[in-house]
Amino acid sequence: MQRVLLFIIVALAAVALAAPTPRKHRSSHIGTFSAQARGRKGTTRNPLKAMERAYRKYNWSITFITPSGQTFTLGNPDSDGADPAPAPAAPAPTSSASNQDAATLTRTTTAAPAATTSAIAGASEQENGEVSATPEPNESEYLSPVSIGGQTLNLDFDTGSADLWVFSTSLSSSSIGQHAAFDPSKSSTWEDYPGASWQIMYGDGSGASGTVGFDVVEIGGATASRQAVEIATKVSSSFVSDENNDGLLGLGFSKINTIEPQPQKTFFESILPKLDQPVFTADLEDDAAGTYEFGRIDTTKYTGTLHVTPVDSSNGFWEFASTAYSIGGTTYQNSGASTAIADTGTSLLLVDDNVAQAFYAQVQGSQLSRTAGGYVYPCSAQVPDFGVQIGSSGFIATIPGSDITFAEVGQGTCFGGVQGNGGGGIQIFGDVLLKQYFAVFNGGNESFGIAAKSAQVNTKA
Image (cartoon, rainbow, N blue to C red; front, side):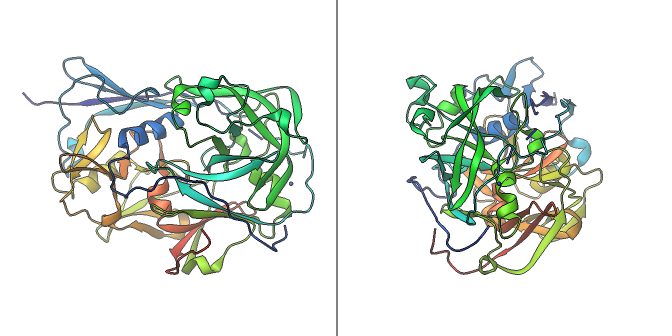
């Protein structure tokens, strides 16, 4: 009897609502935090967690249903990556699209209110800024030091969201754990936002919520003098267990900021008018500290052409078309391709399912693993280079086959950094791709660009 694994993906609506306000370049400041290094293929990485994190973020929950009726769901915030329910292994992918596992998707969105256009407060003169981006021990995210009211926290810079929220002393001691917690009472510049609240809920029931205020936020020299800061008074266990991460700094567009009754501007939008250039750049590294820089494009960090494409910010993301991909140097068209977003807050590269299937059809021994949460293959397999087109530039951004393995999952099996989006209707170009390139996010003309990294070593990080 043929064994069939049916993926039923139910994508729940994002609780997304939208965004108040802030040049010079004389000196840059770089900070870092202590984090244990690990190898790119080290066993400390948890690929199932990486998949859960991505699907949870975009409010997709995925239930694997076997012919016998047993189920296994990705998106459980308390999962430790172990298999909670037994089920037969998924069949190996084939090169024929007709043999792809059946999948259905229902995805709805909640309309977001327009972001406020008036600045609640201006900012004083400030410098551009540069700060380190240090990967967590499992490289699920990159963290950077941020000063809020003179208190330093390590935050995840996330171009796929628009909230600046932090652990706070309003949480219980058990929730704070090893996190740095912001204490508004110890900030002389803190100002409450009476009646304001925020809440981020994900499809699996995890989330965070709390109150809002304004304070001075400084990142590597770039300063917003009155930035909206979301204080967590409740967080789910998935955030509590991520002990290195003290919160999140969204760098998407304020259309998806969740503050009520009035959405507020992101940090980048606040400082934008006073930057030398209306940009921030991401120079992420593999197993090493990279940098984020606000206000200029450091031409020493890349070589060759900067490939730029306009973005559509109407959904709150750095979103663009990606209608072609390459495998082993051969380019293919992706008919009916989903749009793509550049997302520094997602560790993996999630492409349309047909693209992922086509890629792994050329990796001998690959298969879909419900235990790992995605495609796996023998670590000894020859993995071809893989590329995705970046918008209207026509440029194919390529990941060398040697850099596609995300983690070893035991018994000589490896988990790929390229995975399917489960029919989610959007492709997520996360850190597996972005750390291969120097990336430029331009808020002036709303564009995204990437270029090959300079061969020089960044000695400042």
